[in-house]
Image (cartoon, rainbow, N blue to C red; front, side):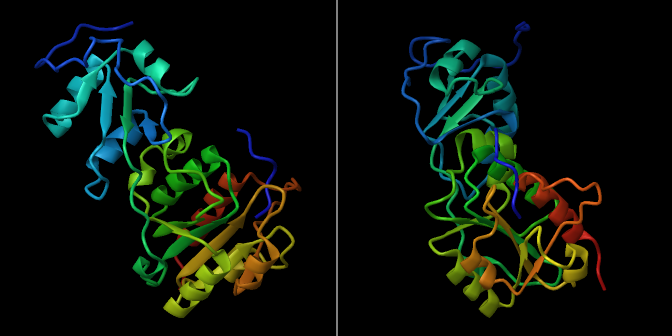
Length: 269
């Protein structure tokens, strides 16, 4: 589905003590920003709750957040104290960290064969959608509507960390993600497994509601401006549009994914 260009006072502490980081609060020993950082309450708590995610290499929290974590998860070996300013120095400019940050490997990708083609099941495939905020928002919506997974291209999609993980609000550790080298070959494999592919295209002749039939479906959404590429579209079983009676030209890809998932989640006979 083509889209417009993507844009994207302390309180008294209570509870058991938590060991500070070397150097004391506000002086974390890690100063270099890594591409493996995630931040924010939902993202970090989801990561700690995910048994499939490797143990974090580093876990930093303000004192209040550290107590909340230990009440929920018990003692955390790698937990270190800092303050908000210390976290801000550690993370990219403007990161809304909410007093929490975690560094570690992203969840392992799943295989296409792991997606069971059950009636009503929905997958999302993103064709060259590169904006981290949009991909994160799509993962969050996929979790909300119970999508079975999201398929990304290996070299043309952002990492599942940083701003993407923040926008996903924990969905990075909820929605299975498959990374593939070639989307067309991935669609061929999914077809063999029993999935039907529908490409979202504003120029299609039929509405999405007419095309969906309750069979397991892969909804293919394209990048901003370019939409679903020709070769990928040729591997779809059908194309469909999102009707826009207001006459607006197109939707942002994250908004299009939300509308498509809502439509796909409606019961069908």
